[in-house]
Length: 72
Image 1 (cartoon, one colour):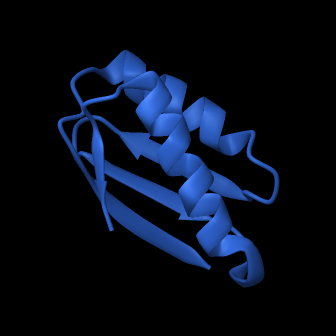
Image 2 (cartoon, one colour):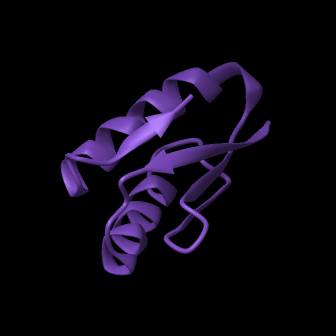
């Protein structure tokens, strides 16, 4: 499954790069991208674990930039 999410209050490109790198390390993620310019995150992962992976990605984002919100 591949899905895009809108991000709110993502403040810097460096933070987006850190988020992307950390999300790609989550077990099961086949691809991920975080764009500062478009304020969007894309995650590609197996259907059976997708919700768990998205929840882990949200935690990663909160660690890197606590003010950033994922609009699900």
